[in-house]
Image 1 (tube, rainbow over the protein chains, first blue to last red):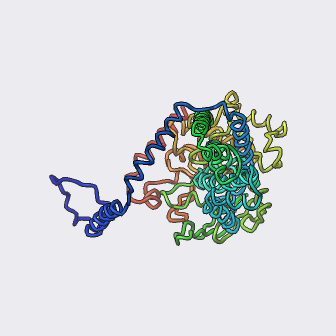
Image 2 (cartoon, chains in turn blue, cyan):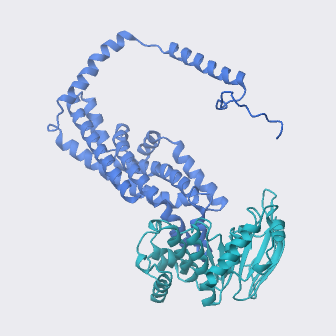
Image 3 (tube, rainbow over the protein chains, first blue to last red):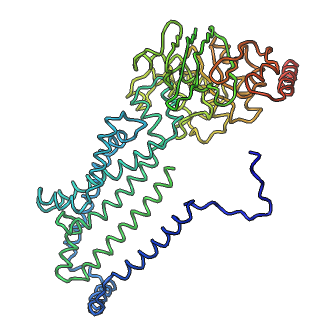
Amino acid sequence: MSEFTVPIGEPWKKPPFIKRSWLRWTLLIGFIAYLIAAVLTIDVNWSRVYEGLERGKQFVLAFTNPDFTSRSGDIWDGMVESIIITVASSVVGIAISIPIALGAARNVAPLPVYLVCRAIIAVSRALQEIIVAILLVAIFGFGPLAGFLTLSFATIGFLSKLLAEDIESMDKVQAEAVKASGAKWSQWINYGVQPQVMPRLIGLSIYRVDINFRESAILGLVGAGGIGATLNTAFDRYEYDTAAAILLIIIVIVMLLEYLSGIIRARVQ
Amino acid sequence: MLRLENLVKTYKTGDQALKSLKLEVPEGQVVALIGPSGAGKSTLIRCINRLVEPTSGKVYLDDVELTGLSAAALRRERRRMGMIFQEYALVERLTVMENVLSGRLGYVGFWRSFLRRFPQTDVDEAFRLLDRVGLAHMADKRADELSGGQRQRVGICRALIQNPALLLVDEPTASLDPKTSRQIMRLICELCKERGLAAIINIHDVALAQMFVQRVIGLRFGAIEFDGSPEGLSPDVLTTIYGEEDWEATIEEADEEEVEAAE
């Protein structure tokens, strides 16, 4: 301790994140070199871009003149189907996620249960929605059932993981106090854990409803029903004005959901 | 009524928190447990109701040996040990009433507690206790709306509604101001006397301990260094427990307070 000379009069600098200076500089220079090399390899066909700009322009112009009426029946049907897929898959997905989230939280579940639940989450997260949808469309045929199952499956991976992380980071002492009263495991979860994670659960659920609605618009492109199917048809027929109308409706609904989730999340804090 | 025999706790890191501790607390006695941070005070209290599993040794509550109990039997015995915590440990997003009634969880079934349909006798007792600590009008407030002192009172109610024989109290005043600290200590000791409860109180504030309890135990490195009446706490004793320091002021302060209280 006496070895340390107090450096009065010398400037002070925050110690660098990577201590070895040769490693720090190698990483930095290597990264910049890679970035430059990567940009140089991008091959752009400028004449193709020039032609494509015209098509892009038509597409954008269609937004100034969306056609809600000529295919209103199809749009309505697709929208109702999307909303049904969203609500059903969110409810089922969330209901299944909660027990899996409890199982996937190390401070609540024993090790074997934890490993099984984590494995379920890993599988659900590893398979992207579109891939699952293609598989399920192959099994169940075209239509909203495949979309519903896909989104339920995806919801489990998303919600269980984030909820489990919230359970793992809860205040241990509050839960301990409930345990100390002689509560059973189920009562302990209900009194000690649930109140702590409820705001997060509600917030995540609403966020997931939002995601499920947007995804349901995409899944139609691979034949899993919903507004996406209508949108796909409109593109196939080069009816950009109808497509624009559909996209506008999707945007409005997503914004409404966003606004709603903001209000609800503020309420449950 | 509480007897610890050769209680040992060794953490996975190799730290020996308790070294073969022997201790007996008779019925209705309030004991203060003092000692520096890391002396094993919290571990000791948590080993009694097995929130922390002791490595070896035995804990007797009356005639029941706790360390060998099955999960269900342990839950039954935990009902007889009320616990009061340092940072109150109320479930913040539940109401005051739910927090107090959570002390009855060991007595009611899952569905009753889930639906918040507690027996009328429990509800009455909860209101009686809240009234005793002056918080009956706060029953439907959420716990995180209360001040520190109020929260600790609710914590006391939650422990007492278990109808315990023993109170395990972990630093009840550590996050409270000096005046509230005294009020809380006084309240705990009064309630123990009213109900004939034994209590083990972990406490940092030596002067506060001297003011209220009948017996003081000093813990250092997981072993008992002092066991006696509060008057026996001399500067020498405090030095063996905590290390070298000027202790005169601490002890004098306690004496003056006793005089004040007597007046």
